[in-house]
Length: 148
Image (cartoon, rainbow, N blue to C red; front, side, top):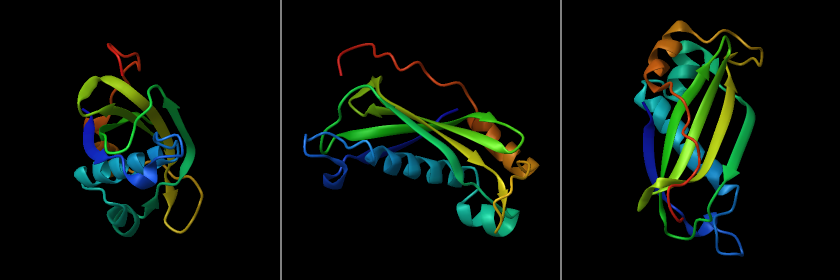
């Protein structure tokens, strides 16, 4: 299952060419990440204070397929592509609200579970693995079915 959030492209998200700046996608991904984890009952406070782990990013990527402009409403789907021994792959697919059949960008984070206050990998706790399981699925191919 994919988790979705909607957010408008804001003034601070665009560049001099009038399209979304590549860095702005990290804001969209961060919003989707936090809300997905919260929907699993795993706020960052819960992860840190109750479960005793942090999830630093060790890899971030983004691919862009169509330009997006100011005030467009985007839908960001977030889901887990793989949960390994100590790593979690978090995928993102971004679409325009008005054209949900066209992916405008994709992204992926690789998160590593580390002990609270340490930066040494630890196994993904069973409770975390169980709570994330409903959102594990395969990414969609980014080919559009129509004009952007």
